[in-house]
Length: 334
Image (cartoon, rainbow, N blue to C red):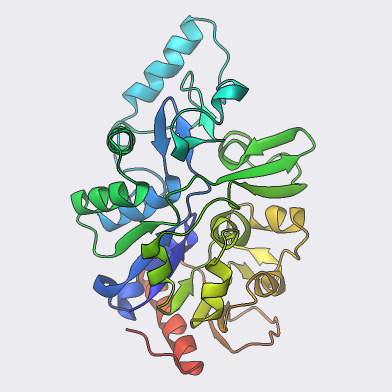
């Protein structure tokens, strides 16, 4: 049995070929929820949904976001209405007092749906309507996620990192902004001065997450700050990782990152934007998978391969390297 920590696109891309090395029917995926937003009253869980849609065979693997071939009629009409009414575009937060009121799971990350700043497809939106409605019926995010996973016929056991709200807030010279505003709306334009995981001190990993963290853990080439950082900010997660075999795949080749704003975010929180910085961020990792071209000398066992993942064959190659890294540290996985 093995557990994957997933955020962004790095780990989901690895899952695309992970069955070459692991029995995914016995695997668990713990998804980051620090990126979640409530948009127009609907809870959107981007990192949960990437795994959900991938496992269901409907993910748009060109963008690694949303459902392939989805229509966007509702999104377009929202913008038409905003233009016709003379309303400014998004992102539009709800009033300050609404940021910590209402549905507990949505605190600190509530946006208006007027001229929504995230393009959400029509089938994709149906998932958010179902999720939010089930939450309002009194179910936990873990229970709702398992219900949706059943609907998409997932092989892996998909878990949100917590049933409590955590919001990734990026501090910039222009003020603080939710990670989705920073990344989706502003395209990582403002300088990063710090990153806060708001609510993490009060959030706890669920019993299911704690149990999954007792198995060997794979950290794919996800962003160490905003994909994995929210999990590590919760009490008990780092300690659990210290007590189990962990193999991490670096999202960097030396100082070059494959994609996304990982370098800017690493620098913004005072970490070296490099493979060496990733190793420093993961002191609990027992071994690393690095790219053949990465000359970083780490103080832990390493396995090298071509770590670029552009399809299932690439993912299978990296997954086999992860399996080799577990064998190198004497850990049994399947």
